[in-house]
Image 1 (tube, helix red, strand yellow):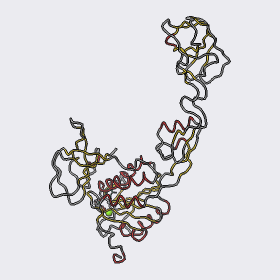
Image 2 (cartoon, rainbow, N blue to C red):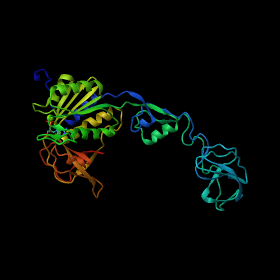
Image 3 (cartoon, rainbow, N blue to C red):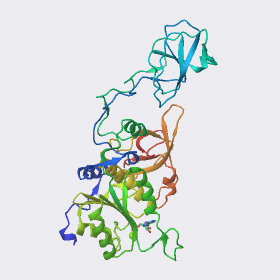
Length: 407
Ligand code: AMP
Ligand code: MG
């Protein structure tokens, strides 16, 4: 088999090169119509133009009394109540007032509202505090003061925030165009794996990676098509890959991409897809297969839990966000100062670290204990992955490096 493989398939790729290859193969998913309750965090794919003025009527911004501003009377006759949500046929002229609640339409004739806190009602009259001099327009939200008919209120490409969803609802847009959710399948491979609720027999372990990956996927706006475990047989893994390539935008596997005789995913991806690279010049997570089959992206993550999750963070997460058109696909990169010496390795090391702001305001990074790739605890409370390039000399405490901010 290896004779027919491209010569540089197993060339070690620098992380930046791997990112570029993945990005070049990541499609922008098509738009679809989604309703108001399914919009949070999704990418808008149309411009939204207001077809009305907001507010559509002049409304009070306080609870109080609608009056004529140009009126010296301290005591005025109350003509009735104007509550929000109602239309009354009340008029206000000099010497009169109408009780009004926040959001209620200003009755004809009135041009100011005095806050209820500055008034005192007795029977059908209201006394306005001596020191209050109502000004025309006071406590009134004019027609169109929030937005105007014809205003472009949201632009294609933004991530829909809660405020944006509220705005759409206020404009009566019950459904809008957003990027379709990526359909994602997750497979943990390994004869040693049992479900977390089971007691492992000798030699077995519980499947941690499937659940870690599902948790990592949860905030990314994806739809999980399938998640399961496959044993280390070609047939089981081939059946999974074939079915999931057909119905997924992204297929993520865990395990089976390293050098062992039971690392079957690696070979199956060559058989079923186009493999772009299989090794990264990074730690953790040197084995990492990236392949495509049509528009489907396949990520073969290594089985070591930390390697898999770091690979997900650095390569899979950005791809899943980019295919939705998210402008924030990349984690923010910041310069951090090392709190202690760090010994580099022969590949780019993604050091799991906790950040704290030093007295001079600079974020300072401390490694989260031993960094072996099976030790999930190093990643549990990590704020950042400090990117440690290879070099001969150790890095000294106080030196600055780039870091990817997590969470
Ligand atoms: P592999 O990449 O399949 O060679 O697995 C590398 C290491 O990760 C082995 O120690 C596996 O037992 C472990 N491993 C593989 N899959 C999982 C998983 N789903 N959960 C926890 N550990 C795993
Ligand atoms: Mg395995």
